Amino acid sequence: MKKINVILAGFAVLSLAVSCNGFLGSIGVKAPGVDVKIDRQSEVAFVRVADLDGNSHVKTATDGELYIEKEAKEPVKATTSLTSGKNTISGKLTIDGSDLPSVAKPVDGELVNAGVIVTVENPAPDPVEFDGTLVIDDKSGDIPSDKMIVPEGDVKSFGLLKEEKTDLHTQLGYEDPIILPESFSDPISDGIDEIVIKDMSVTPKKGSKAPAAAETYEFTVKAKYYSSLSYKPGAKVHIDKTFDDLGILIDVDDIFKEYDIYFDIESTVPFDIKFSASSPDGLTGTSEDVVKAGEPGKPVKSSIVLHVVDNSGKKVNAISTATLSLDLTAGQNSKFAKGQTLKIDTSKLTIVKL
Image (cartoon, rainbow, N blue to C red; front, side, top):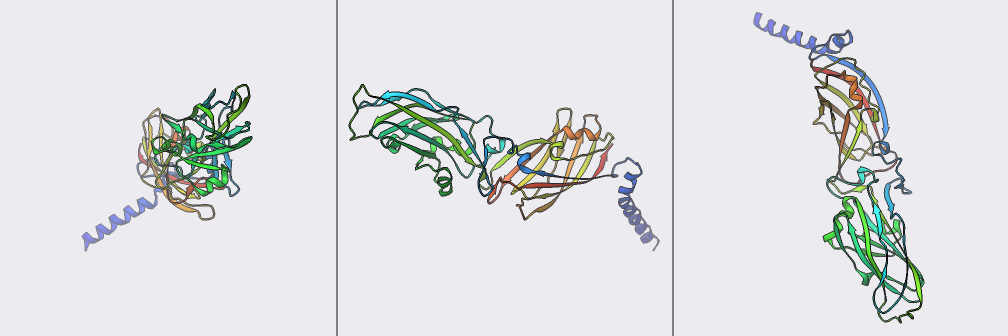
């Protein structure tokens, strides 16, 4: 009986120690296992987290969904006569993707809809066939001229696509879809760094009468890149922010070598999100927990523990400027839209090692 009582007493002491963790922290005791109360809340619009609210190339559809539209730096205008053969259009079109947000360039997987829209203005009194070379990042191929026919005195837009989507056609208003060979179409849906259209020319359509050599016409060619910010299941995007960017304040004026931070996060963002942290002076934070996908009107709450090893020698509150990496994984119907938020409740810090 005495042995049983000793065991029960041991459990009682253990239970008391656990229940007192918060109390010990509140009276200033610093030791492994002690909780330090944080109790801070923040709410952030995810368009800000993903750097989508200040980018002029991010557009909003009528239903609130976001998409990318980036035009070539300037159109190409070239005056040429139309002979029986190819007639060169001097110059090239360049679409620079360097200033597009990082979420427009999945680190893995694909965007649902993406394409290059080419618009050709033909002032001549006869139809012409347009062709050129399309270079997307490090892949290139010929634009099929027999599919790019512009009627006389007309302007026509063509969608150069990896695959045809009805909603893409409706939104962009191109007249003819042209499905590109897989050999160089993949980068369209992977997120672009640069698109170049060069070696352009126009040829009188077969069967049409070639104008006299003395007659010249100014052809105008424009181009733009479009992509949805919708992702195929399994696609991954990466965002680097700071704790400050997410409104997370860890106001602890002590130095700990190792500790756990506890969050409850309510998400209406339709991606699973994993967090990690780092700083160049020796802080690393890891978590096996996942912020589960939600959607506007249907928030999902997840409990997250971030385990921090800090060899920087700085006080805990310096973590506010550490890099907070967000790795997002798309599920079904994952997309960026207005109204998506993260509500973050930072409840406590538990000391692991002084």
